[in-house]
Structures are given as structure tokens and as C-alpha cells.
Image 1 (cartoon, helix red, strand yellow):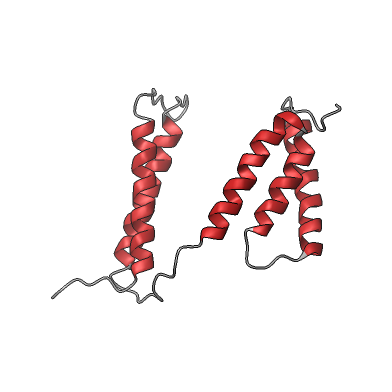
Image 2: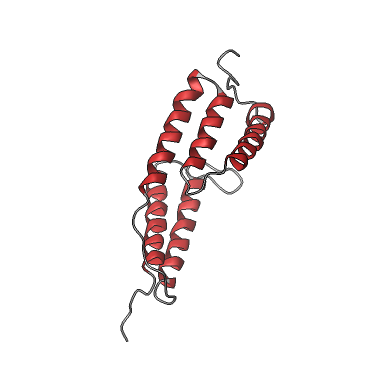
Length: 150
């Protein structure tokens, strides 16, 4: 009996999860763990890394059982557009404020997809911005300026 990968995308996704899990565990190994009742800074990333490894192993094992569609070409547009949106958001937070930065991030993220529907993006931008301001500014009181003049 020969093991053969039937779903290359599941196998590669499993390896990616395993890699991220290992990276999280390695990055957090210098931090104190603490206990479940008094979690240290290494507790959460270590356990999340362990869960990522577990999910990766399950996904990679599933690749030997179920047939996949195959791996398509690499999607450069989402990678480049999302990276640019995150960079602009980080820069804009200090210079134009929280609300304009969120608008740029949400619209930029929507531009990364294959379909861009302006009405949906406007509604999503308004809802996400109001929710984010409510949660981060008024809820947990993060000290961000809303606009450049405030």
C-alpha cells in the first residue's frame, strides 16, 4: 500500500498551519507560561500554536484521503493590495486619525477581492467604522484620535 497525496491544497495548507504553530511556540518560549488561572505572556501563544499544529496535522492527514481540485496559481493582487492597505492604515493612524484610517483599510481590503460592489463597500465601511469606534474608542477607551483635528 502506497500513500499518495490526493489533495495537494489540503496538504500544503496543513503544512502552513503547522509552520505557523511552530513559529508561535518558538516565539513564545522565552515568556513565562503561568497557569490557567494566572496566564503568563507565553500561555496564549503556546496553546494557540499547539492548536494550529493539531489542525495542520488533521488537514495534512485529510489530504491522503479526500480528492482535491488542485492548486491554482498564486494570487498576487490580494497580497499586494492588502499589504498596501495595512501599511497605509498604520501610517495614517498617526497622521489622519482612526476613522479615516479605517475607511482606507476597509475600502483597500475590499479592492483586494475579485468583485467590488460600491454600495456593499459603503455599507460595510459605515457599519465597521461605527462598530470599531464603539468598541475601541468608547468601549475599551484606546487613546486614538478620531480625526487629524481632534
